[in-house]
Amino acid sequence: MIDPKLFDELSKKLASAVPSGIREVQADLEQQFLAMLQSRLGKLDLVTREQFDVQRGVLERTRSKVDALEEQLAELETLQ
Image 1 (tube, helix red, strand yellow):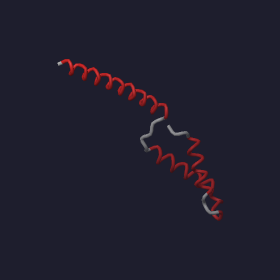
Image 2 (cartoon, rainbow, N blue to C red):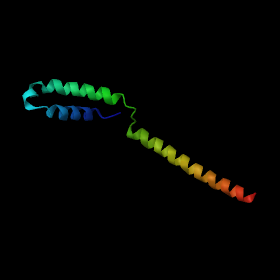
Image 3 (cartoon, helix red, strand yellow):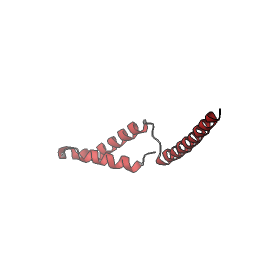
Image 4 (cartoon, rainbow, N blue to C red):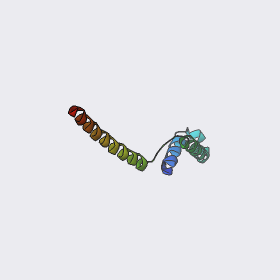
C-alpha cells in the first residue's frame, strides 16, 4: 500500500497551488484533493516494496534453476 502521508502531502501541495483569492476554501480543497487521490490511486494495481522484493527473489531463484537445467540439458545432448 502507498503511505497515507503521501496522500496528505500531495493534497496539501495541490491546495497550496490554488490562487490566493481562493485560499479561504483551502481546507475544503485539501480534503477534496485527498479524496480524489485516494480514489484514483486506490484503483491502481500496486504492490508494496516488500511484495516486489519477494517476487524478485523468486524470479532470481527460478532464473538460476533454469540456467542450471539448461546447462545439464546441453551436457546430456553432447553425450548422445
